[in-house]
Amino acid sequence: MYCINLNIKNDLNELQRISEALTQLAQMRNFPESLIYDINLAIDELVTNIINYGFTDNREHIIEVCLEEDDMFLITNIKDDGIAFNPLENPDPDTSILLEDKPIGGLGIYFVRKKIDHISYRRENNFNILTLKKKK
Image (cartoon, rainbow, N blue to C red; front, top):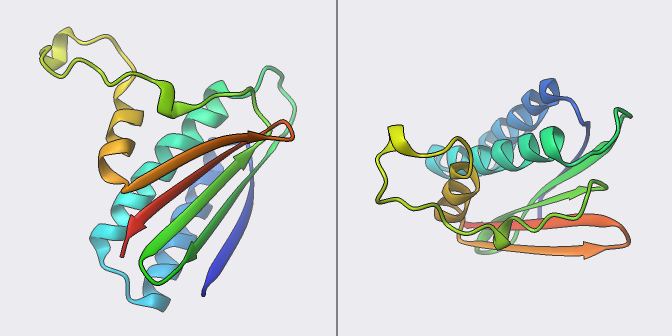
């Protein structure tokens, strides 16, 4: 099993480090571009939400991102000490409304749920822990 662990600051500039690690993993393990694209999109959306909405102070926080694989899946674990938030409890947006009539926000988590095969959330010792599994 291969694993990459990243500790990033709650700074949007850190998203580039995640993207670079995914690219490195894809090259080493010969993953298809579509797999890496979907995982990168999901991580980018979720970590952006954590950075923008997860913290009630202006202090530096560390967000842990672990990329690993098993026989069937590329697995991503995202752990943060932000406010408790389970993105799986967000209702799906009304997709019958025209895009220009939709309120801003709410589509990112919807797209994550559509692109990722399995998502789980738990709150443990004041940490949010999201696990994403995408079939290889």
